[in-house]
Amino acid sequence: MTTHTPVLPNDTLALLAARPGEVAVDLTAGRGGHAVMLAEAVRGELSDVPAGRVILFDRDPANLEAARARVEETGTACDAHAESFVAAGQRLEAQGLRADVVLADLGFSSTQMDDPDRGFSFRSDGPLDMRFDRSSGATAADLVATFDEDELTDLIRHCGEDPFARKIARKVVQTRDAQPIDTTAKLAGLVVEAYGARARASRMHPATRTFMALRIAVNEELEALRMLLESIETGAVRGSWLNAGARIAIISFHSLEDRMVKHAFADWARRDLATRLTKKPLMAGASEVEANPRSRSARLRAVRMTGP
Image (tube, rainbow, N blue to C red):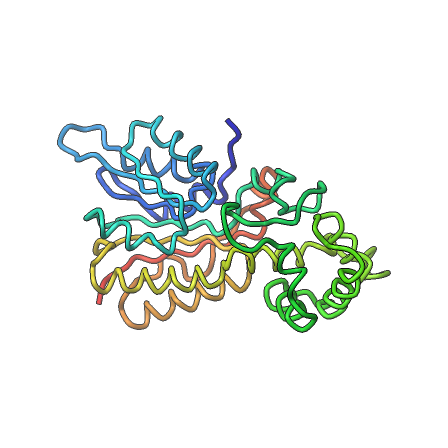
């Protein structure tokens, strides 16, 4: 079974402090790296400790199934939901469950990145898709084909933070009139052309930010995070799907995501809805970055919810 190396595993487990008998929710199960650690922590092997439970969410059915199988191998009870984490509160409330531990790793799986058919990467040519759930929704190719120059510019500038957003958008619009831009190689090549001589001096591949922006837009990631943060606040205030003292950890990989999490956590702390467990985000050390380069941009923040 192909696995996925979780980022900041030790820090995440320490902050969440999952205990035997608790309900742990992994909102972005991926291939189960974090979920297995949570499962082992909540399992409960003593007769006087109730069995813990792990609830999994992921929009990628194949990854979710892999994570579920790995959790079940630990002997921990597991429920798996092939849908966005936005539905977590509703699902737990319907089951009569309240979470003690909640984790969201907002990155995407390396198994998705490494599969050319998914269209997340320009390292290998493939269809320009980028959907976490390939059963529905617009693809990256659809956005590239339909957004006008201003819309593409705004997307690449806002979500990709690329200073050459206008040049890239203009190049895309000019080119698509003559031929469809439906593969990762075509789009990456156009971005390099838009960069011109600056491409050689770029620290990262010129297409990196454009691909990130399209992935965020295709999967509505920022809107989903906003809704998740609102759901956590509501769940804590009403006690609808979060227990008192629930620990929440969110790992982000993008400055916009991290900013949203930072502001939400700070707001909750000011209103005495939560206690911040991290005043500043925790980041991977040199040894982890060397072993897992994906961890380089990870930012981990955590809070303990204290209620209204």
